Image 1 (cartoon, helix red, strand yellow):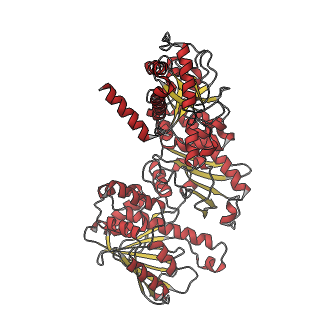
Image 2 (tube, helix red, strand yellow; image 1 turned 45 degrees about the horizontal axis):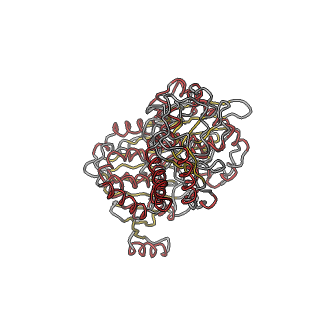
Length: 639
């Protein structure tokens, strides 16, 4: 928003509410409106889905507020959404008898973006350009603003339940909107009436058959009845019964109905990877309809992401953002309806209710069971679920010890033996080498780079499989988990390798450096590099590289050190250990140079060895300028 627009808005807000006022949309709304009005998206009918969704939400909100407000209860009739067509005036009107909006609510709801999915949409467009908008609109809940794909003027007449004032919001979607008082005789008794004056390209939406097909496709599972008035003066006709989908027997629900409901619930317009619908009976009775999305939500790792769990009590929406599921199942889109929770429970008490906690625990158990079945019976389908949500599910390995065994059963990992696929821990244990007593892993942020790490060379030479863990959470759960099937997890970048008892697949190479010279080199490295390393030792894990860095026996895994250092905790860590490979020609050359020129003459080579080990570990040289000088001198010498 410009400074002038902001000043105009501030002045408008300071006026008496009885006066009309003009406003400028916030900058991100203006950006979205500009995209909507110029969109060539082929499925413009999403505007009706969004309006119906908003209307149904308003009806549910009124039902909830009427539980604790007798005045509202008296005016809350049976919830209803009515769509009216007028071909002569070229208008579509979507009306509801829900909670309605006050003047301030109109400003906050229609003048600014509050939906994280909509904001994610804008961010995606910003990254990929306008051309991406056509393919992305259908994957986001762009909300009310989608009306400007089909209309060049929009009016919202509304009266907040319990108030004696009504308001008219109008806009042409060109950067500004106005709000003016509305005579009560011209306003809906309660709720909102949205009237779209269609543009010249939108004649199809004046046809009753087209509206009915859109409603059945996109909004047939909405839990509010929908009526259609085909022309002025004609009797309304029911086109959607408003029966909550989750209350129906599974045998009466089609795949299309499940799909439609999933899209309304999640705000995503892919297909769910898994649909789970059941009724639990016993001490606590409840019905659950849950979906595993077919693609990763854009706000999956957003710290401010709101839950997609909806809680109903006897079909009355109590909370649309209840933290019912553990954080590691936050991608599940779910509706829970129970008759065992008091209808008058406050939203604040929802999170503290032992009944709800019990339901949440049981639901998490069932979801994990269903994921296990999917992994066993449809491995290819589960592989896609794991690809989308592995980083989130692995949070449970660290945060939820009681679920760890169940999560280990479905966990899949890339490894040095997986060849582009994934392996289970059960697969890993079945292929242990003789004398192997641990499950080895290496952690980082890129599986391909991890697979090329010098620390793996000795393990590969012995046929020992190493898990390639490239999610940040991996560095935490491997430290908190005791192990799997009696085998502890052990980092290949921490402490001694301890793999001498496992036979090499091929005959080992002879040392290229005499033992006495190796000892002298180790001593020189320790003294020269003492400021940067804790120790120097001959490596059993290197077969091809000259040197590598590992954490000390009492230190943390190298990747965990990096993660914690990024959060400002670097001072708590010790220095790394430098391991050298006496069979490598570079080590032989360094040892010879030390023998012939002494430590001062060999100093550049000693520092170069450390810097090369740091670079191979994904770090920068200790002193980049000095490294460049040494490397330049080496190139000039060999030229």
